Amino acid sequence: MNKLVKELRSSIIEFQETLSNLPKDKVFFGDTKNCPVTNTFAEGMHIREIKIPKGIFAIGKIHLHQHVSFLLKGKMIMVDEENGRQIIEAPITVISKPGIKRAVYAIEDCVFTNVFSNPSNETNIDKLEKNNVVNTYEEYNLQLENKQLIKEKL
Image (tube, rainbow, N blue to C red):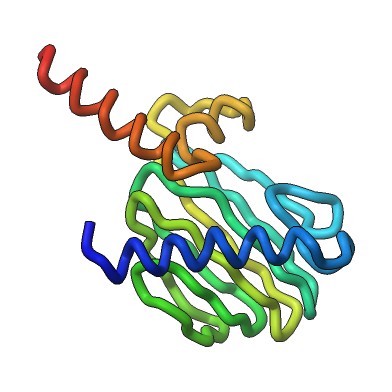
């Protein structure tokens, strides 16, 4: 991992820690009633849509797999280790690589949708979350190590 990626990851984690001190009605970590999530399923796909109200900071989890995301409505500031800080406006398609964690600020009311591969057609959200995201980079690195060990055994 290069130095810039490490710095951006550290900045996002520091930002998350700083945000945790703000009023709880302005910052959200994970799914909350303030940022409603809708899960929809199609053959081999899990579609997760989140509505983020204007003026809200939201911090995502770390993604384990590449997937496609869409900002369907609104405008936001998005920060991640791949693209740094950018302002995006709907409609836009975003390709998320493994290891990505994002911090966003909704400049306008936003609708953001992730489309995950779901070859088993699982519908249990807890199981899907375990397959798609982790909370820390330590967990992410452990997942990578486990994946490598499995490949070596094959």
